[in-house]
Image (cartoon, rainbow, N blue to C red):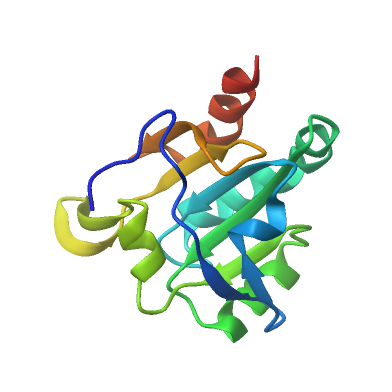
Length: 153
């Protein structure tokens, strides 16, 4: 799938969260959504990213923005990750990476010069009607929140 851009309709999804509850994109109709894809729970960059969103959760909420993370981790891994870091938002499991594919967040990437196929750390700000306001690919973990807040201005 190619990269999404401003004005594109965000691909629909239906995934399980860390509690096994089915979550759909349409559950967020009427409010903005910061949707981000991360490679693997409990890894340093993913912890930094999740905790930065946790720390900005109230500020985002005050701006009418919900936050949701997606990775290929299992439901139990997502639950452990959310609990360990007191994450107040949903983490969804995309084990077959179909949703990541649809968002252009699955492909060739590298860590420390090691090339692999997997999640491309990406984030998306989606409007109340399911359209992409802004998309960021190969985003740095600590840029997710500042990028989203800047796009809201």
